[in-house]
Image (cartoon, rainbow, N blue to C red; front, side, top):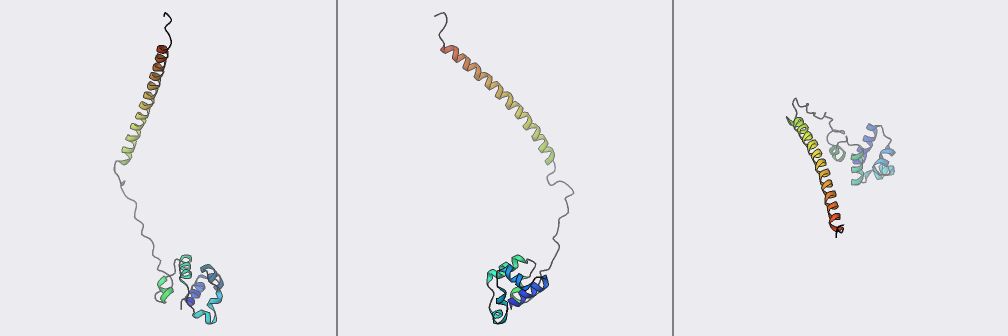
Length: 134
């Protein structure tokens, strides 16, 4: 029965029976006497598997297999011997230089435009004012 296996997990993990019941949202009273024969709700099973991810769900539900999942070391790919994108760093440097030049050119053009705007405003002001000789 699932409740018996839950208590086996508690023993294996060194957790008090009442504590494991509390962690999965059940009362310990449901694990004693005649209550032990009643089914466990799916939320409690989900909580148990979330709390103890190394527990084998197949074993918990059916009693088949081992209590704990097999722990295999994750495969780690060796670092590449060459960059993933050859020439990528050089391209970034080249583009960075180009961006710097364009920013400088933009600043120069911005200054020139502002100067021309001031000239236009001054000319417009002169055109609006009456001529001194009139």
